[in-house]
Amino acid sequence: MKITLGYLYSDLMNIYGDTGNIITLTKRAQWRGIEVEIRHISVGDKLKKGDVDIFFFGGGQDQAQELVAKDLGQSGKGKVIKEEAERGVPLLAICGGYQLLGDYYQPHEGPKLPGVGLFPAYTKASFDRMIGNIVIRIQSAEFRMQNEEIHNSKFLIPNSLVGFENHSGKTYLKDGAKPLGTVVKGHGNNGEDKSEGCIHKNAVGTYMHGSLLPKNPKLADWLLKKALEVKYGKEIKLEPLDDTLENQAHQAAVSRFS
Ligand code: GLN
Image (cartoon, rainbow, N blue to C red; front, side, top):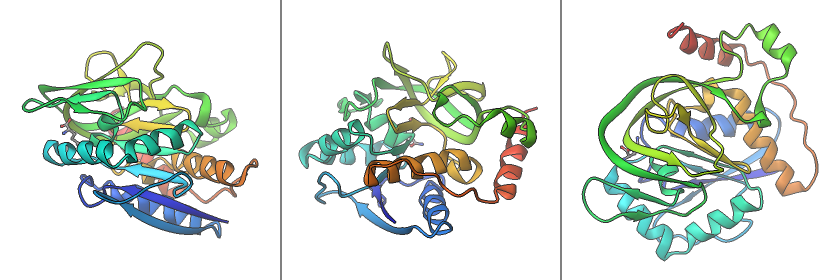
């Protein structure tokens, strides 16, 4: 089997180690004998249905976001990304990338940046800097661990995701939107309502840099599984990997707060 990772605006939207997510998806696929192609998609590039099996969209500063928002609209790539996600193609968007996939991002200065409208959410710049390690408890049943795994793994906080956040934008979920999780420690979407991120079908938006996936292998495998199932049209069971190190890194991050 083969998957194509679509790395959106990798030249403009890649801060706080977000490329680590591409490396994690690549290695976890290759360790299972799955061929991987990484396709960098940026300003002026074309994109059509079926080109990509998983989209990744990293974080970026306001200046880059203005350029990217314009390209997403003018090139039609934003519309394609939304249509692909609506048919179930998985996506992971971090911080600035996440903000541009909602309805809009209103920076401190300058015009409101139109979003792709994938996540039922909107973002407004604030004067609060929400920065630091973050731990959330996963809300979605999609990739919660099985009970015996929780018991055996002795996770300090079952069904948790850990990461690092650094944003001043505050994202608010619209009625009916599903948060990725609830903040246990940190700020999350806006530092006010304890929500973090948003999940829509197989698309995940979050403020969790880190990079996120190395310390959260369940989420990485969930994205890979969904990509293969959409591409090949059948249920896929990924062989388990030895995640001892990944889980130790996860535990170390969680225990910092406990
Ligand atoms: N410019 C956005 C904010 O500060 C996103 C920053 C980021 O991607 N870390 O909220």
